[in-house]
Amino acid sequence: MAVLRPRRSCLAVPGSSTKMLGKAQGLAADQVFLDLEDAVAPGAKEGARANVVSALNDGDWGNKIRVVRVNDATTKWAYRDVITVAEGAGPNLDCIMLPKVQGADQIRWLDILLTQIEDTMGFERGSIGIEAQIENALGLTNCKEIAFASDRVETIIFGPADFMASINMKSLIVGEQPPGYTEGDAYHYILMSILMAARARNVQAIDGPYLQIRDVGGFRRVAERAAALGFDGKWVLHPDQIEVANEVYSPRQEDYDKAELILEAYEHYTSEAGGLLGAAMLGDEMIDEASRKMAEVVAAKGRAAGMARTQKFEPAAR
Ligand code: GLV
Ligand code: MG
Image 1 (cartoon, rainbow, N blue to C red):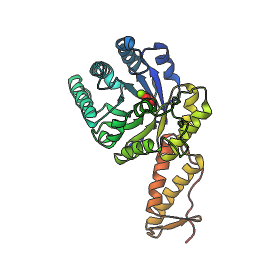
Image 2 (spheres, helix red, strand yellow; image 1 turned 180 degrees about the horizontal axis):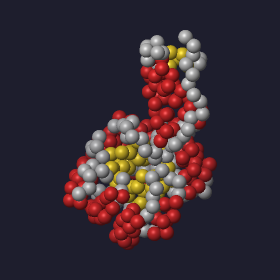
Image 3 (cartoon, rainbow, N blue to C red; image 1 turned 90 degrees about the vertical axis):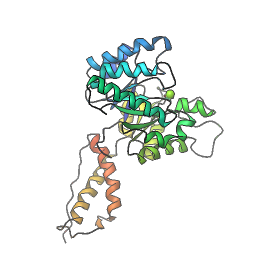
Image 4 (cartoon, rainbow, N blue to C red; image 1 turned 45 degrees about the horizontal axis):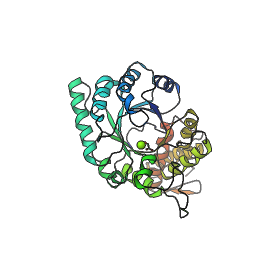
């Protein structure tokens, strides 16, 4: 993974609420996305564009990743959302999130539009990234092409609520197993398909919302499920979910320590000083190039999360 910016917690903020646009700035989420889509009523959508532009330009977002979710490419609002927000706040905008993506053509449309805006406004070409939300059966089927449709794509996101509706899943509780299905995890195939597409293209995979905001234990359980597979983060809808997401999507301290130890040990053992070994012992464990790759992933996530190591590598006497 190139430069890893943490997206452990991605906070949804309705663009129609100036109060929430203000409050979100002080919360500890890695990313915010200011919403023009489903959290904004049709009658409030045009006004929300101006709120979002001023919140990006005048707010203090620290080092949060700043994203705006526009309406999907099949709606009448989409092009004006993109033009208003990218022209109005381009230098203060990291990504546009496109919901309900169904195919690579929709990502290419957004890519071309962003390039035109960047050229017109004198912004750096390619500076605005794209986050692609997979929310229906067609989108999932085309997920890999979507991931590869533009260099701007930075994340592939699962949108469970719309997705459950799209496939007629027999449950109204987003992220929870549908009653009657006792054979395993009803989300496994979907999560894995998104993760494979994201990893094939070397971008981040993000899990969507958990709507039972008072059930922090339920949020943790569902967040751990996607984190265990390798997802990088999850949406949060409430301040109580932020801390849990930041914890669940960071490596555990012992895993982070071990990862840094493996990297240091492997560098030493493969050097002249360490004996040019391809495989070496670290304590009771044999480490090789594959161990280094696994360790690199955990170490990168830990460093991005600002973790500090608590152990140091001491080469064994030879
Ligand atoms: C999010 O947009 C969802 O549909 O779950
Ligand atoms: Mg949705």
